[in-house]
Image (cartoon, rainbow, N blue to C red):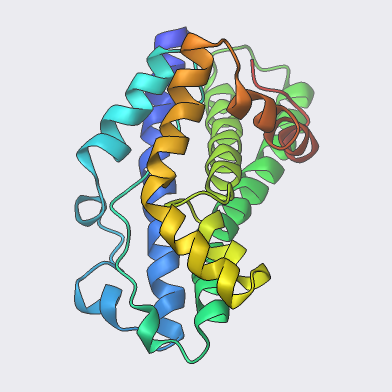
Amino acid sequence: MSDITLRILMFVIAIPSIVLHEVAHGYVAYRLGDPTAKSRGRLSLNPIKHVDPFGTVLLPLLLSAAGMPPFGYAKPVPINPGYFKDYRKGMLLTGLAGPATNLVLAIVAGLATRVLTVVLAAGGLAVGSMLDWVWTACFLIAYFNLVLMFFNLIPVPPLDGSRVLPVFLSDDALHRYHRFERYGLLFVFAALWILPQVFHIDVVGAYFSVTVDPLLKLLTGASFG
């Protein structure tokens, strides 16, 4: 499979993975009493309702072209924590819903990859066969969803980890943390672009090497690249 074909397949996989991630946030918030996402039609699986031109389309393409893991994001599902009976618990559960969905997708795809590995080995099917394509698709689904999960668990706004962190903060620390939130995107941009391109320090790559890579190997029995 050519490199360009692989990247196109990864891009196709990215969109439903990102959409399901966002819908999970909205659904859990709805179950906790917040009707905001539902009232705005954001619990739909229709990708058009969730696609962000930059985060869902351009960013994965740019990262893929640069040889980096092509993760991205959809339009954030609107959540009003004022509906939650317990602010910290509500933010924790809604924050974890997206990464948890990605983990489930990665586990299912990983198991499918292992089954197909056995089938391909037993059948002696050639590279490029239909089953070989299905194996590649399942492997990439597991890989992308692990990348999306671990990246979102970084505790920097607006990533999902920033919704988990308040559970461990005192009221005073939480107040200071909220003041820091406006600068979160700057830190994300620095980690993704400035550090690797200017200082040749790949913080995100190092983070993935101890999170995504070993779990991908465990789930699929194979490594990326």
